[in-house]
Length: 233
Length: 298
Figure: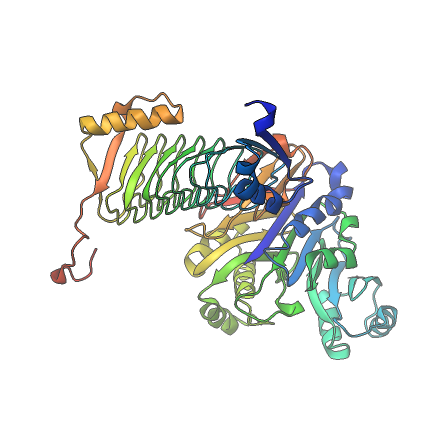
């Protein structure tokens, strides 16, 4: 960690989430603090939400709902598991969950990188809008549902309906896929895909071979309304 | 929204601490359920010839010992009563159906919350911490318990609508979520002679499962059947005299997390209700997968 003058510790057994977030939003920059260590999160909600500065936040323990939601520029690491909605609506920066993540991790995220070392539960990357997500383990059902832009790398398996109603987001999966969602299809890996996967794995600190991954993207058959399809999608 | 908590201690030596371990779990779920709270605790069973009935008199002042005297005059059997504010546990050697009928006739203001040989049940409207203090939950002893904090979304805030719900003997259920077909379930069960006490969706699920148990299903089979019969969102946590079971709907709409050590298994809607438990740093933590059934026996 950096030198003491630019470092601050919060102990959530003694301090409130409001005190922590208020400091991160307002005072960190004024006090030239760039590194923040958080102890005893004990499942608290909304930790390090709405950050808008290049801070490095290390949270030691398990967190509740919406950790690092709406993150911009900051690097937030959770040394534990995350509750629902981790890095929801992230705009930029990096969020790293060292344990597992509950439902809707990275939901609607526009930019930045979300890394989950363990498994992600259902709806990981739902409505993704441009961020990258790397999951070291497996993902639950309905992951990448209606994902519009961005990339999701899944090093383990996927449950049902992966990539249902995908738009322009691309999924790379290394393990088994129980089922694809409507309009999602496997496609050949291009050279560009191999480069992208290698880069994302490297950013996540993972050493799998890019050639072990398969690409899933939209068949785009739902892009236009077909009156004669009789709604049988 | 609601909060659920469950705790089963694996070591008999820990049974004296069951309530003390659980109170922070229940209070930790206050934000998910500030309007009512309750729990069912499973104690050592009473003797073979006896049953326990958990009774509730609401805001009425009730002389529990006078009730006991009148009951003994009409039903010749050994009865004992242990009162705690507006709740009491009646232990009786009489046929429990006869006791329930006697109570309905002579003290209609008293609600029977549970019947069984192990279960004691407490529930009321109010903040979880207040209810835990009122009924001295920290002193409860037993092998396992099922607790709930309620934020009503689909029916009224009354003591009767608070969880846990019970049906039959030694069976209880708490629920986080909402069912979309409780009236259809009720329409199916009522012609079989199954009576309902409230319009609450969870009661429909509780009576459905208990009906299946009486029809010979084991608890897991009954829950499997529930996946096709009960429509909606749910994390269900249920107890029998020997078992604690948790399951989630196919979409895992409502949260749940389990912590297991050699000493206990603890279940809650969120980790913040588990953070205080002993040796939690070394517990195995996992979220129950959708439509999978997780159960533990005492």
